[in-house]
Image (cartoon, rainbow, N blue to C red):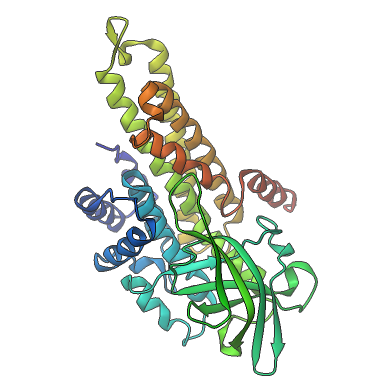
Length: 377
């Protein structure tokens, strides 16, 4: 049974504790799922999460980040693909929630019900964490825009119904000349050029935009606001990446405690060995410290802070890096089972690695934190 004592922390309200209980019951009934057909499983998970009402908070004018984090932590603890499916519904529509027109926001009803799948198309072969370098262009052509370029490592690529696409519109150099667009998946000129496989089973793709014509109404926000929009979305959702890592780490700790109590070695259980006790203590310390940073960032945003760039960067950096260590230690405590394909610990070991890269790699988060401090007087 997972430790839920953190729900008594002052970061949370009664509604958060109720949400946690409801989702935990749903997870125990519905998860994990079969991952042999990742596309089909993700589509069904989105539908089921929507029917159960857990996608309601992923979009809209007032996004409760603490709820998003609680949901991601809980889903990740039960099934990494369920967490992925939930997370992309929020990230993929974040720009529309924050800056979209009334017409564009009509999509949000569908994504919240699980009737449409969304994707966030930012990364490119030459620009990952350095968003200002992106090469995809959107040239104004009368009352429309013409998109050309390529995106890579796009989550939900190939199964999404709508994409938030960032492109260079040229209002200024670097980050000042980017804009965001809402692109329905059936728009002529969108190509799924390659489906990508990673160590964890997620739907990923390389997208191409070949003379795609978009109406001016596809523009999200104003021309040249693309970088601001992207950073605002990441400000909201970056903390939730730390929450997912926290969920993986909690599961690894749970499994390690169970293993230590039952596994015998040298005439005693693993739990009787002081070295193992030390490892378990380190794991528990990392889990709680990560939880404090994650929910501090989420609470700060929910209190009305315009930006939580430093807090979110700290939460993501620490939670993902420490979860990697917790899970690696769990592998050691499980011995051969820890690397056996299909074992929960082996699955967690594959799931955690990508979180230290996407939505800003760990080293980039260090730069973000340092610059935020240096900017203060």
